[in-house]
Length: 368
Image 1 (cartoon, rainbow, N blue to C red):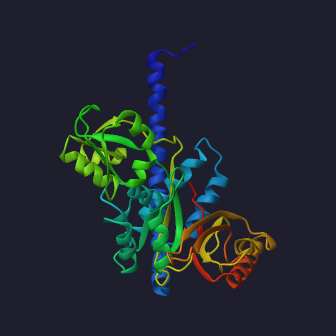
Image 2: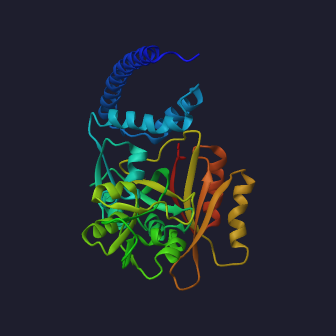
Image 3: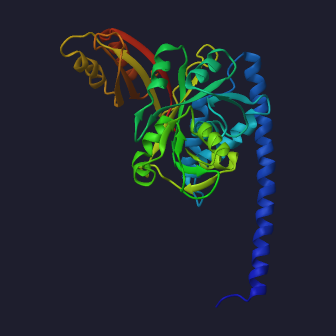
């Protein structure tokens, strides 16, 4: 039998009072954790070691997931604890994180997802500027898109990883929802759609079906497209709800990406002189780029050391070497970390077999 309204109100008030008490306990515990984090930071500063340890944070989050008994979902653990760790790190000095800007891009969203909101944002106009900001010391870390589940690799990011000294120290994967944004509601009289070329490609079928006459206008970022759309009602933009809020735009068509499961993978890059390669966390990825001599069987020979040492390859992608001789660079992701004997042995064998070899980084796999 259902309780009378007065009984339900009393029960609800009792539960709210208990929740308030738990919140007070949580706040006290978070401040206790923050004080401990400050002590750790002081020790690290005295010994000259880095504050941000990706492998340590990955281990903490994975351990909490394993111990979680519910009803809190395991997928909720990572974002909660990343915010806690971000807030604790910022007590000393917020980390400076560069990404493709302006505010409202998916790159900004990826940066906040990985580092938490207590960061000093360094929005950049291009991927080249992100790499330059990190290399010059204007930012501690950079966040760049490297792969999309619909359109494949982001060529400029791969080229910059090859030709600059920055290394990958982490990764994060973002479920991308592209929305059509506009200054006024409705699809009528849209003359052009402004967005990053990748976003235009990821929404090609929808645009062809619903706005076949509209110009596809490539811009440096989706947020830049939103900025332009905010100034001209004849323009629409493809961007996130974050960009819609940032620029005061209507979502005139939600989730217009061709693939409902559209995801983008982002690499976290850093200067290895200031942020050395993370130690093994237990769930790691090793990324490298190689080229092989132009002879029969060279690509097969590239894969033999991996099989011999029992190392799994999770990604293999080729890019032209731009030598004019039909030569290629191969971008490879391996399961594991160079600290593991079998991975170290496979990498040593690969190095001997390759005409060119560059380790791009070894880092914890995405915890989301």
